[in-house]
Image (cartoon, rainbow, N blue to C red; front, side):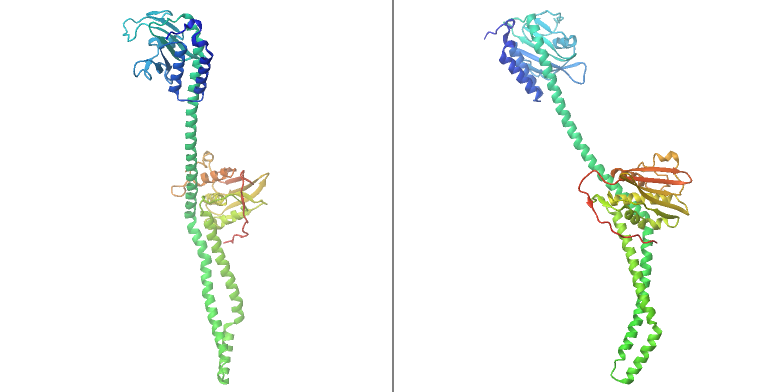
Length: 488
């Protein structure tokens, strides 16, 4: 089969061939498999130049001195995928110089030096090689070869192919960019999924950290809570013993009056006498009044125990089932004070100056933790006869809660570190170094902030700022229990 001479236009001017090349470019742009795309493009180019063989070499990304055979037709076995140094052979020379080559037989018409000592496995042939250039960057080279007996290529053919190979370079570069982008998207998707898993793990770890700090706080105040519970339980038991003796007397008096209903008058008179004697010794009016008082006092003691236990239970509740609620923070503060009061009362007086606060959307159990941490820290900063003042108020769309103590204060060099995890100035064994860090994290989760002011020898002031509402939907509006903390 004879081929039309290229200087007459050949397939390069054929509309169908050009459309097919465009279709291959579109296939490449869609992200098809790179090796197959490059092979298809090479076959089309070889056909367009009416050649019998050809090859494409691309610069290996990440290196400056390597080329890789990316596609080939009628090449030796295992040639595709092999690498060669930049500067070696025809491909290497074209990539280094950036100039196309026309080779006819053993004559390099564009100045390629001959290497007569090299072994030749092919007969003398005619070949053209062009650099694949994108902007000012050479990404590789393409070569086509004619077998002996075919017309030799001419300089006009070389020039004609230059414009086509420029388009081919863009197609290959765009395809590589598409593949790289697709790989990058996969990497980013994988990274995003990994980050989501890490965020879930971090959130779970944070919940565990908060719960651990709660348990540490509970352990720290457990003795005081036991003492608080023991007081009302003690006088309830004492009241019940006294009530038992009262009831014994009353039942004896009642039995004596029942005996007066006996049928004989003699026994009736004797029973009536005993009943009157008992009535005078028992002091019935006193018993009747004191029984009512004992029951009321016992009921009050049991309610105190109930409140302490309930507050402790609410405080120790984990965060997995928490929901955002709209609550009264004054009640939340009072409930926290109900738990921690015994920890503080022997060294400091607690004063509350509550302003007028609207209900606030929050995670109540988490804010209980913040309040307890700040109150306990204030207590630890006071050696004796101090004061802890808790104040509240509003500022625009925010509320603020201030905890102020007359303790030892915080040195200036430590102020910028107090919210770091595990940082503590307390002696070993007296602090986890997590209280303020956990508190800071909880307040940030609520979209708020904590300000701190301190002076050594005069005390510290922590002010929490919280928004009234959070930026999400489906908030549960809860009815706030109207239960006041019983003073100890």
